Length: 287
Ligand code: FAD
Image 1 (cartoon, helix red, strand yellow):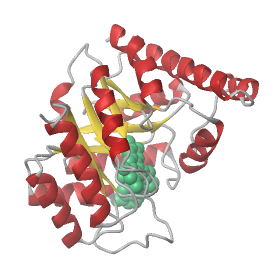
Image 2 (cartoon, protein in one colour):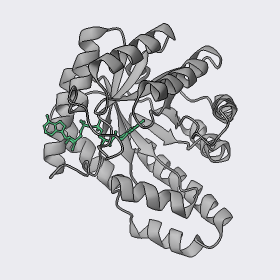
Image 3 (tube, helix red, strand yellow):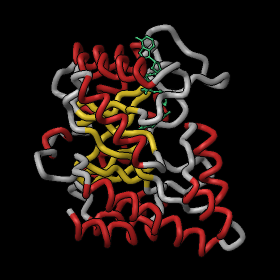
Image 4 (cartoon, rainbow, N blue to C red):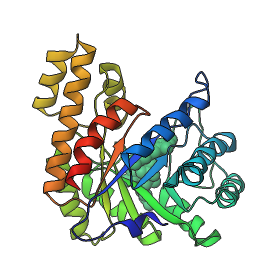
């Protein structure tokens, strides 16, 4: 099933993200994590795409295929384009098709010295157009940034660029993580005013430990409300207390988002069954 078909008026979709194992982790670990997530009844699970190359695409595809075929849960494969050629993207699309994957989260990817850009794709909108021209049967989602993409000068300009992705064929958006719901509401209002009318899921990342959150925030530039920094400061020397407080903060955010009628919540699970379970047990009762 295409992801966008899951959304509807008065309905909130609850979905998960998982990531493929790092080289140092046994491949079985991710399958065990994905299998464990099944009992929390997500509407779908998306699988991230690591540092460029068809090899990595293949791992994403394998996990997305396992989720769909073995667990019976709809899945989406993330796919980045800036470090890939059209021929490499063709190979991945063929792999996804052969493995029965219906949905792609089409992304540009970060530009880094380890992954120099190739010149076939410059923006996610070009990847979306390309996929549409090659095989119109995929459901296509795209990323969005409630606090503006770090490389863009203004939120208005970033939303104009987001509109290009929707016009190119993105049918559903998943947001970058954020800790201040007001930033998401402002973003949503501006996006709707600019004619972006596809479902938008709010990306929520619970704090599991201090290092993880510092790394994520430095990467994506999410702002930290006073309430959040006070929580981090109070519990930073007690990892268990920090994790429980992080879960409670995420649940608080989600309750507010659902009360305000969001289309969906996309939970960055970080493959952590404990955290996903705790959050799901509250959230599933509210949907
Ligand atoms: P784009 O939409 O192409 O935007 C990138 C920048 O270019 C923005 O500043 C935008 O405003 C600007 N822009 C866009 N079009 C134009 C234009 N025509 N002219 C001028 N400027 C333009 N990364 C991974 O490597 N693997 C993953 O699995 C992954 N999953 C993600 C999941 C989600 C939900 C999100 C939100 C991000 C994810 N990322 C992932 C990170 C993402 O690859 C980076 O944030 C990347 O820097 C931007 O990707 P994008 O698809 O949003 O890019």
